[in-house]
Length: 623
Ligand code: DGT
Ligand code: CA
Ligand code: ZN
Image (cartoon, rainbow, N blue to C red; front, side, top):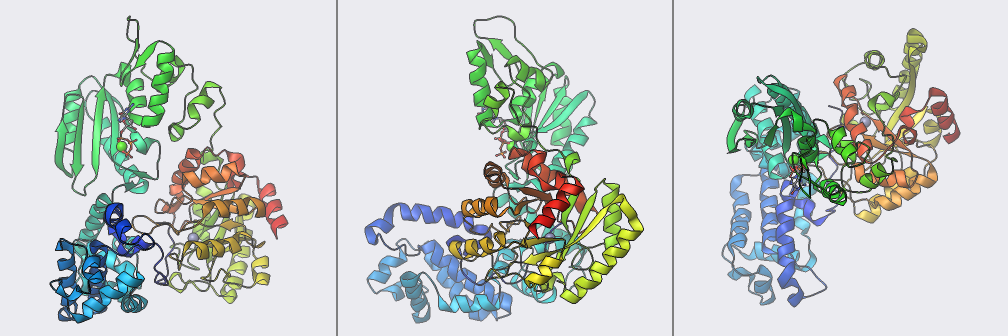
């Protein structure tokens, strides 16, 4: 799907302390906090020596990377033994260290003791840094996928040159693993299932995975006899970029039939609870879902309740009380007694409270209730307002379709403007373009434009790498010759905050750059956002006039809504793009629009909604 390939270069610095532990960062984080809670202060308030868990994780990482490299298992045993011993150690290793008795720890010999000493005194290990230069540490996160061992990880990496879990996922989906030695179609399925179970372990589910699944469940429940309506609720209906579990609301008088159907859906592995009106299940990939069933006459109240958020619901209940009403999960009651009020639609619920209907994306308990009361909710952007796709790819770099096919697919979807922004030269893994190839591309765009006439406008751009030092991949005069410039970070994402913020600022302030693509670089499930000072970036963007992207790719959703909201407050222009690499990617647009809606964005804030004339004028002015 619409994702950019990432370069292998993620090994330059350690970045955030916990990134070392990849998918296990949450566990590490917890143990880190617990540890710091009591013993560090009594030891040395200025330094935070590694705790036993962190030391153990470091040795496991060394062993894993060495095995991925192809080192014989015998050579990694000492690291694994030390790791195990540290985890079971009743005292802090740092206490042995202070007493000069590290070698008294079982499984710790001279070589390991020296490494612990270096880690405790400097927080770093030269030996590990060297290994990480050879073997991207991101690969170690693959080992958490149940069906993958170090040998296979090493082989896939060396053959396909991919390093992130999300790249592994798309390779498995795209059938690119089955022909590798010792692999088959079954191994691809096993890998995909394994990745899904990891997503569960790391907590929340990306919207791009949850949304289609909820649609499927809803479609299946709608077929059950007696069902009048079925809708997703919870954080999913509010379109949060990640969701905890799936909540589904059904209107039917026959709740038993719904419960029967729900608990017997394909792939249900466990029924966690089955009641008269509410049941919850776990699917074989670990995803959890619950269903509520209410009679049709109270569906509106129940849907409103189950959509949440909790904070929004608290505000509504307070408002109800002010009107002498108590609001439950299925009805209003007069506090002083009297008949219950049932609402079959949500509109009635809000009307009863004297409010405008609030779009689910805004229901987070911020200012939306006050705005609805004053009849001042913003008119949120909709998919149909988007007239242009300003960031997409073709076979010139790593896209799946030719420019002509992408243009035709865009026309089918009613787009008026498309912009080919194929990758720039240094992104070798994504087949980045030399200036020479850009010239060919420009000529071909002219030809296609002639053939398609004024049905669609096709512009020539490039998604230009912001290199590790903040410079761009092409000289200024070439950038000036392009119709539009998208600048993005794909590599060296783990630079320290100051460095990576300064690096992105350079691009924000470059007058040739028009859009900053997927600004934080995060990718589900495994690539954390770069450690950027977004306040500084957004303030600079407001000044320079560059547009910040909301990537609609369900793997990215970047900017996410908190930053998009802040951008809007500061008057920063936004650009919602699919980063399409294929025809289907165009249809991911609604995810980006949902994120924008969560941020309170209107069509005026988004350059993709502008008329062709206005867009061209803006581009011309920017140079
Ligand atoms: P999630 O699943 O963590 O992404 O977040 P939600 O918002 O889907 O929350 P969840 O699944 O715990 O509950 C679903 C909805 O049920 C929630 O959005 C609002 C409603 N709800 C749950 N607990 C409460 C509660 O204690 N009070 C009220 N008023 N509503 C609740
Ligand atoms: Ca939920
Ligand atoms: Zn792209």
